[in-house]
Image (cartoon, rainbow over all chains, first blue to last red; front, side, top):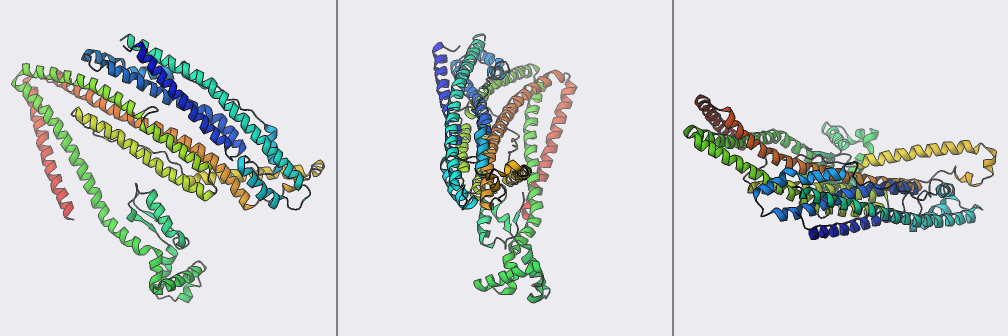
Length: 214
Length: 399
């Protein structure tokens, strides 16, 4: 019922949406990475939040795709005889395709997100300033270092210079780790983009097959 | 909620107006602003003591009241209010009590009026259906052939209606689901806005404010989306000559920031205690003494450090909570959409099966006569009840 051109146009549109959605996910996750959040929290958060976000976005994309497909179908049968329309109604096509796409055999499942771990660094954060430097990163680090460590925690002690040096080192390592995390996110999204694309394509094919049988 | 009363008004005297305004803004959809008050019971007790003839010197002997006597007298002097009136004035009870009394008189009447109005609307709908039923029965009584023809026509009509309705339901899906729907766009905008505000909060007070604003804005998004969905169906059904009988009641997922904050504090405290215990034991090991930095670990953390830690932890939890709540809201709104879709389908199905029943179940002339009589009787009864309700409503208006 739907022409090859229409289906190709729909695929092009949904691919654009997919690109847009993944760009949103990337900027959202990077936004958190850049922020001065508890590093333990950040690590766990990114690991669980990114796949969860992808899964949710996949559902939104599926609804969007079904909207495109159903709009095109409604357009085609708009002036058709009532019996043709009733056939489409009977087929309950949207619900069936959606159930098929979310069925555990066909559903999109994001791959496991592996994030570079640096336990040593996290431990070190604890040692440098117990209970204080758990959060470190970006501009806030400098504030924490000058306000708390130097003036409140270790005033007048000979280890001052040593601590400051360690803090500087730790800060650099945190920045490096965050850069690696961003790359991890990029790679992860690239892999899942391919999976999402083929999943959405399979939905278009299934839809086409189903309505051809009507 | 009927009333909201903020307590300890005198303790937060400088902040009172701001807090009242904030409460009126936050609960604007739930409580009318003239039912939100700030009161202080200590001041009211002092006022009662004075009314009983107690001297201010004696009242001051009560430790709980002493500092507030001095505070209020000072304030009264500054504002030129006579001391004997000041305590009641600043207690907030002067406004609260008359409002409560009025409410106690008006509330039952208002409630009765709502109930009577709902029953009246119900009767009208029933009357409409019975009239439709009766007209069909009368056609059958006069001319069986014409009746069969009418039934066939109606069934065909309902089938067409069901087909049309299917496409309306499709339109609803397109309007309310997917990336391009206003609902999804509103959720996305909300998420980016509050993620940024929460993460960039400089202190606990700022974080609390953003969180409360987020709750308000979310309520608004939900309310708006729900009324758009119900409005859509009402309008579309009007085109089909039908109307919705029931509105969907949504359970709005809420998060209480106070609970979130308390549980985070508790979690942090437990962690601190565990860490401190671990450090104390390891300090007993002689080789640990060689590590000078261990000494710092016994230093008590300052209040500002603790607040910073709490802020960090809370930010993380707030972000996770917001993301979870958005998922729940999406789920609830789609459930509302499904509810309306279900209502439309069920309504059309019921109409078709009703007419089928009429054809199959009433077979003899006597049964038909009886059905007509019973329907007419029901209609007369409804008419009588409606008149009674109208009189009742008029009397309530007089009160």
